[in-house]
Image (cartoon, rainbow over all chains, first blue to last red; front, side, top):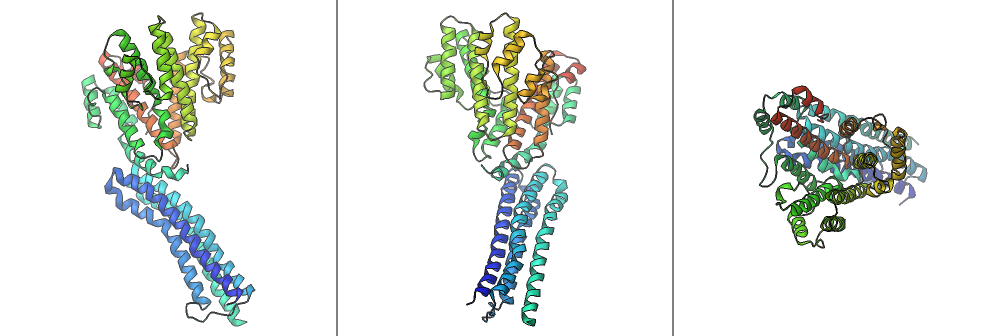
Length: 162
Length: 319
């Protein structure tokens, strides 16, 4: 197996890994806050659960990028492309936005959602606003996902054309 | 400790904050025609009767502490908030025993050291079973009185040990808010001692000996300025208490009021924090502030104090 394919796979691994780590930390943080509120008022479970789910998307995005990459480089079909180190590095770089964006946005979305849980605890009628505040962080995870996918598909186009 | 470790505890106290009295409810209490009506309003807000031997104020504070203790990752870090009650209990026990009255009803809660153990230690003059932070000062205070010294001297020994212990415990808490709050108490106490000693003709050495030692202010400088009649505003600023610099040279009740309102302001600022120990400290002090207000209002109602005077005495309300 070539160094090129190894670099490409490493990129996919980082996207899935850091996206997952970001989500795990984020969801864990909100989970602690949510448990605190539910311990006092179990009727707020539904409202805080929505907030807890929000930072979980980064892990899914990372998984999606890694999955698409494996398809693009032929690993999923059992016929891996013969990539040069430069081509492998291009795929690797394409995965980095999702890796970094997933990690950082996951952690911070968790903190924003935990603050939202505290808001719900004090003013349950404001739960919609709490969700909006936390969802704003999602924008940057989505942007990272888009740029990683766009870069990956275009790199495949360049390689195929060459 | 990572700030997010407090997420569970912060959420629990946030869920309990709506049960604190609001400014509007405090106004209703003040406007109540008599004490009975005020008590009834309190009952509607969940102020239940205290357990046996404890009044409603102690029960309220103890509930808040139990909530905090069962939620934070390491309750020991926040013991500075209640450790002063142990010293108050030692003081009450010594005074009661020497006056020949039962000390139980003078105990305050929540506290760290079992009150029965404190009472037993004082009655048997054996302080070895008390925690280290308490044993020495309890022994000193007891022997000061038993050897013919004044009750005031014993009180000063306990007060000094209490403040020094609170400052020491606050330093290790990791809460900036708690450090500032305890620091303000230390400043106020030391200033009170210096001014009292000066006005009663006591020596500056005696004043210094009675004052709580803190790393953030120079007691020597404070005593020097008080005895020389110099202004203290610069001293307050240098010690990090700019908030009371304008009032520190005025009359003491204005300064006390300012300190109380500064504490309320600090507490209010901390309510926008989401993580860390500060929101927990904020909740406990908000509870104490609420208790103080209710105590003022009920006592005033019982004594028939006019509405305007009650409003003047009531401190700023958090929530």
